[in-house]
Image 1: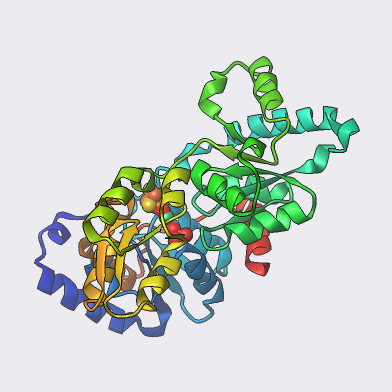
Image 2: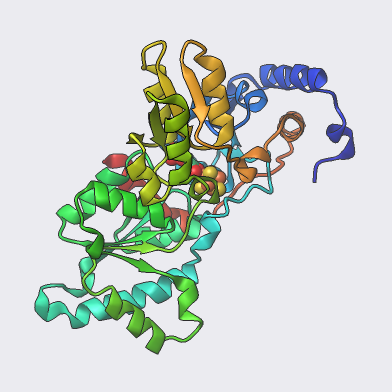
Amino acid sequence: MLPDEYRTLPEPELIARIAAAKEKLGPDLVILGHHYQRDEVIRFADHRGDSLELSRVAAAQRKARYIVFCGVDFMAETAAMLCAPSQVVLLPAVDAPCPMAQMAEVGDALTAWDALTARLSRAAARGWGKDALLPITYQNSTAALKAFCGRRGGAVCTSANAQQVFRWALDQGRRILFFPDEWLGRNTALALGIPPQRIAIWDPAELDGGCPDACTERSRSVGQAQVVVWKGHCHVHTFFTVEHVRAVREQYGDITVVVHPECTVEVVQAADLNGSTSFILRAVRDAPPGSRWAVGTEINMVARLAREYLDRTVVPLARSLCGAMYRTNLHNLLYTLEELLHGRFVGQVQVPAETTRWANLALERMLRL
Ligand code: 13P
Ligand code: SF4
């Protein structure tokens, strides 16, 4: 809980005190900031990046004793698992769970896994063995789900490397069970040339507790699938519609529409380009002056691009805000840093050793690719 005295501080004082705390903590501290953080927060980040880049930066930290993560829960968990046990990871927004990460619980994942592997082992005569399925989870998932995948030979992916990770699985002759984002899963499979009829969906809500019969029924319907996607989504990105794409094209004429692959298939297909937040950033940064861009991702990032590249037109495809990312602010960042100066850890993110061991297998498989 943020103490009252921090809630009411005026912005100039917050800024001065954060800068002073950073200075005092020196090389003991590193602040990581995801692109969706608001301007006033991200200006204090030593490293900005997308989810993949920040994982790599966290894993590479040798000197910093404290890693303060301006982002959401799954990002801080990943940092905590990848850095040394002696390093402390802190999340200023202690109440910043990503809603999509909550959509795939390990118990439900296990139910799906058991039903699908049983189905596939019965189909072994047709060339698919019991081990034909490989679980892959989007980084935007709980540590427990990453561990679930790691235990079963699977991997993590982010929006920046999903195609690479899918290819790694498919090249082994495996089918994929992908958690928890239906749309990143579908967009990635389609981009790799997998036909829509070989992409199936697993909706944990449909089971209604009726296993094993209901599971058997569901698994039968996914029998021919090469990729099975979990029915989860990011509300920030499913907010964008084909109508938004049509409207910006009508308003601006010659405009490039770039969206995040968490958008629905129809929006990704209506856009000109799609990719991770860093991909989007590079696309706008490397574009010629005078070019026009409509960007379908979180509004704080889009608004910053518009301010940073004034010689280009950058407009949001629509305004869509991530409430989880928005929970980090100057108030809780200052509180985190000042408590650190007193040797106290506010919002420390820790993952049980056994979970870390298995989740790291899945993370390392991704980082090696
Ligand atoms: P990136 O993988 O582009 O960082 O996206 C993270 C995210 O949360 C998008 O919703
Ligand atoms: Fe989660 Fe979507 Fe926010 Fe990313 S943008 S942190 S996936 S809710």
